[in-house]
Image 1 (spheres, rainbow, N blue to C red):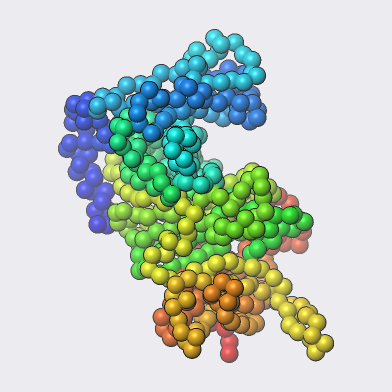
Image 2 (cartoon, helix red, strand yellow):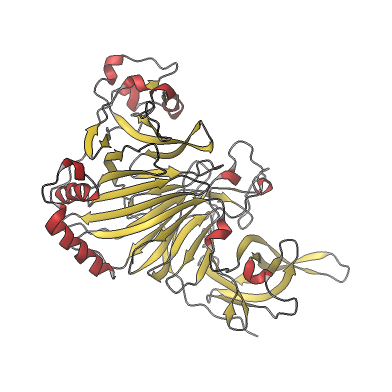
Amino acid sequence: MSLAAGCLALGALVGTSAFAQKRPADFGLEDVLAKAKALADKPYVTPVSNLPDVFSKMQFADYQKMQPRRDRFAWTELRTPFKLAFYHQGMQFNTPVKINEIVNGVVHEIPYDAGRFDFADLHFDPAETSKLGWAGFRVVYPINQAGKLDEIMSVLGASYFRVIGKGQIYGLSGRGLAIDTGLPITEEFPKFREFWLRRPKPQDKQLTFYALMDSPRATGAYEFTLVPGADTVLNVKARVFMREGAAPRTLGIAPLTSMFLFGPNQPSPTYNFRPAIHDSNGLAIQGGDGKWTWSPLGNPPSAVAVTNFPAENPKGFGLLQRGRSFTRYEDLKDRYDLRPSAWIEPTNNWGKGSVRLVEIPTADETNDNIVAFWVPESMPAPGQPLQFDYRMHWTMDEPAILKDGTSYVWQTIRSTGEFYQSNLIRAGDGTQAFLIDFKGPSLRKLSPQAKITAEVTANDNVEIVGTDLQPNPAIQGWRLTYRVKVKNPAVSSDLRAVLKQGDRALTETWDLRIPPLPAAKARESYLNPFKAIEGQRSELVEPKP
């Protein structure tokens, strides 16, 4: 089904049954859809903060002190393994979020209760909390050990959420929708205004909830089904309406937000005992044609970098954390080796569009500077909803994502190109070198006599000086050394490489963009959202013989 057909089909649904009078026992996505449509038909109303100063001026360390009391988790009295805890309002979480429970199909609001929180050593007038509310919620479940409750999902702020599976800790985030992200204009952050959680039965292995989204230019109805496990899965049904006159330059579907500070492909500019600091180190894409692409993430030197990867009906995309050895990070506090990857798998046809990668300069790991999302080629008319269904895998088993046996990029190392002098001492040759290690089943299955070639290409700002392909027995794979010279450092450079046997691709395509360097001066700012380098992958040329 095309995007247009999907919109028309859903529009027919909206026009008939979705907005008809429903019995309470039938509450579900169609009811939230009706609310989203009604919101879209009206002018946007900006929520007004209800926070007193003691909460609005709170520092993050104090906000963290307000923890849910374990003896007051919702559903504690039930035999279900799922429990529900809440976030208190404070700081930028300054407007209340309504949270409801669905019991036997009937909706009941969960009223705010300050008694559900431990406020530690914070002191304030209890009367000041009487008109406050929830900021969000947490789902608690025995993911790691029977009888031991662990938080597995956090829903807090705008349309953000985080999910983990067994043995994982929080890393990157998902979002309901992104609007004008990474552009030299103000980004719009749609917000979840109300939630409905279906009370789980004792035998239930999943939790379903609904969300109503609102923003100046869009509204939305969402259904989430959370399935905990070694890899926790979140099934999403998203229905998005545009308000009359809304014309965002970019609408981002299934957005993922992460952090990349430095790593082997872009080493730290200062001494650091950690070889890498990142929640994700690459964007993986499987196009509708089945071809795989891997784009290592970077921390641009001066300006926001925006890259588009055109695709029609993509089979999946995600921000991945490849490399699970602790020695890749050496961080006992933040444990980047335990942070999950997130893989988006569309479950209906998304039509034509592109996967967009946004990389924002950052000076430290406190800024989420990486965003990836799907951008549809066409926008619906007001009143006609976009319909996107997808499955999110929160996993630490990244090789399992490539189900077709394609080999993948195990790591990318950036270095100075070198050669051996006659005295066997290495010397720089004036090039940049990228060492790309490939591994996986398609390479392991080859006979020792198999002929493998590396197909390398670059845009016209790059001179390909040379390549060297050799087996890497340490990983049962192959290493490609790719040496280049950038002609104009003020212009971005695109590099690609794929290993082949004859005409058959054995690996995903490694796709790297070298961002332009600041012109004739030191890096002034690590975070400049008002400058953007936006581009489509340029035409690539093969190296001269």
